[in-house]
Length: 233
Image 1: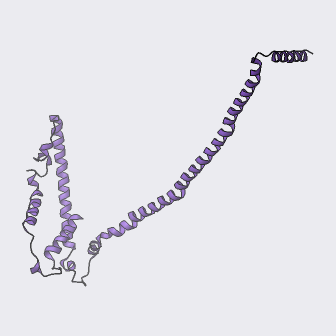
Image 2: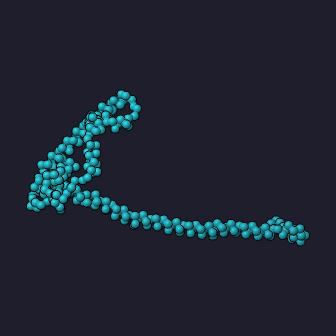
């Protein structure tokens, strides 16, 4: 496709009619910075600048800067294998470029390239090229439509399911904390407080017997005697 459109662009720019808003005489070439930049880019695009053998990039002086020490036999085998693979890939890429350029040259006629000729009848391939092979429509009908539906679905799931589940878990946590706090305050703390209260009362009651009063000892002995007699009889 790239070579197809590049050949189309070449025919429109260099072989088609001028379609600019101003006269050709008003147009001027760029200055020396523009020409210098294009010259540098054009020279660096030549394969022989990087390697005497364009089919073998490993023989490039630039790639030699990144060479590492490896086994000689392994390096030779990899070099031969890579040379064959790169040659095949390079030839296939070149053939595809030539094929796209040839198809573009013979399918896009000069009469159909002019925007002034509104009555020019376009062929099937020219209509496809004019509408960018309907890639925008295909993208809108497939990828864009699917991603939009997926975004709406995920938004709906997040708002209706995930957010509600998070809110429910938060509400359950608050209610559970309230119930556990009430149980801890009423039963756990209440049992501890009752135990401490009873212990204090029993301690206070028995503490009076430790004062050394004769009346307390007589009363305690009398009560003990009565209890023994009651259980025996």
